[in-house]
Length: 115
Image 1 (cartoon, helix red, strand yellow):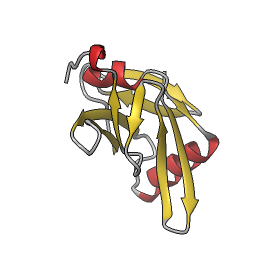
Image 2 (tube, one colour; image 1 turned 120 degrees about the horizontal axis):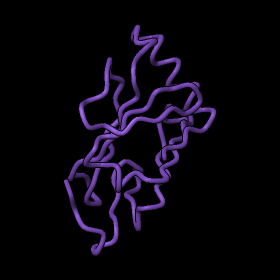
Image 3 (spheres, one colour; image 1 turned 45 degrees about the vertical axis):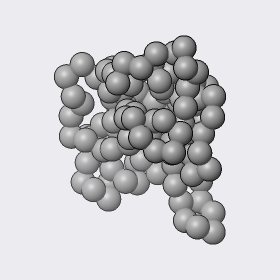
Image 4 (cartoon, rainbow, N blue to C red; image 1 turned 180 degrees about the horizontal axis):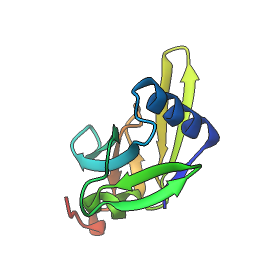
C-alpha cells in the first residue's frame, strides 16, 4: 500500500485543480534508469491503465503500475519545500540505497526484476 503524507495529499489536490483533473488518478510506477538502478514515475492521469492496482489514500485515487507494485509496496510519498523549491520525496522501504536527488533507488540484487 502507498501512503501519502498530509503535505503530499495537499499538493496532489492542488495539482489536480491546477490541471483541471479533479477526477484524475495519481499514477505511480518505476522504470530502469537513474543513477541508482530505478527511477520513480509520478503522473496525474485521467484514468488508470489496465492492470494497475488501485487504492485510495486521503480521498485521492492512486493507480500503481502493475509491473511496479513489488517495488513500491510500503512507499510513503511526501512533499516538502525548501530553498530550491518544492518536490515530492519518496520513502521506500524496498530501497537499499538511493541517489542524492531521491528520485532514483536500488533494491537488493536477489529481489529480482520484473521490469
